[in-house]
Image (tube, rainbow, N blue to C red; front, side):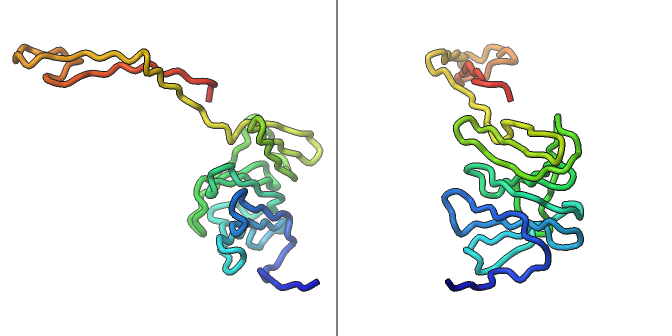
Length: 178
């Protein structure tokens, strides 16, 4: 067994998240006050960048990559769940994602791929679920596509017409509510 130090930080490592499909993209969290809370490598540990940005100084318990979106992360923290859509070092903008959830300590996050459910395990308040990573799918029905042509006669066009162009009317429906 051989070992090597990949990051000489101060604090207690609380989680290690590896991006699915990219083993070189790793996020490590720390559960202490007054230390770097979130660090990231995109080259398998060759270099590390602090991703705390505007995250308040609090213990971070767990990190979870958004499926297929490597810059989107959910964090389980001392005051609930925080998220970002853009890991960008000291400019990372973190926002709370606690809708329907009290500002309580969250210890663990787990994603279930079969239905895009994320489970958050709290400290003493139970389990909470969300479909936070689910995307809304819009279906375009090409069979319902209709066109309307305006003429080039120079006649006064209605506000809905553009002379010499076609207007396309497309029906859109959502498979699920956002």
